[in-house]
Length: 230
Image (tube, rainbow, N blue to C red; front, side, top):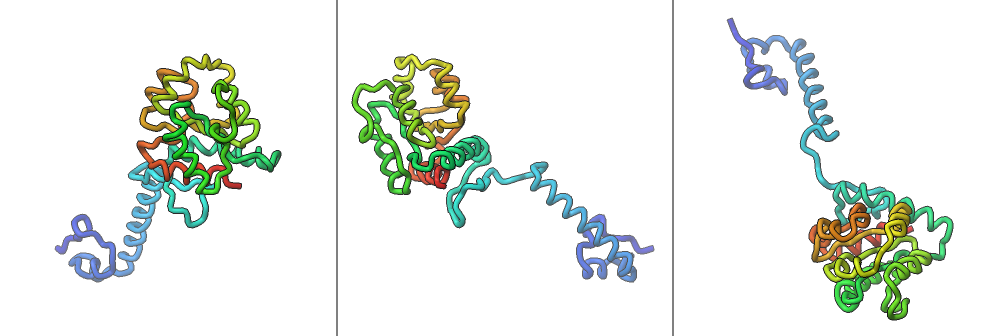
């Protein structure tokens, strides 16, 4: 008696069924079997795409420009979405605000801070930068307060120099907590780690943002430009 080869070869097509000695004359039955096979395949695909199987680590945020080549991780989209919501809210209420304020350590003003500032300006971001907009000797938290009052979001460039300066600023937990609760701060970690930041400022480290170990400074600037564009 002929035996069905489906368990070994499968009947994913009419030609496969035609080659099976048991099913070659059962075209009507094959059609139903094939439908069941297709349904199973579809269910397995849906399972994978929903996260049950292998899924992509990238995601497209709703604010990303059409045709943009910038790629985001799912973690970045999750952490930046509340910031984007705040951008839209503030833009509607105060359309004349600048896009972003860049907070940085004094030692970084001629290095990574200026590099990021220049890239942001080239990307069309209206950026508040201490080298142009603030006088010397202004405490960091006062600078953040002033900058955020005139901008939609604040960018904190976290470098080794910033980590060295943070404890000396005596940043009050309640002040930093208020800024973070308002979804107004985006940490940008450069030449250090979130773990190192956590040792100095657990509150600031609780807000994940962008990291130049994952993206180049140019890509970071492009992501910020998309984030604040309205």
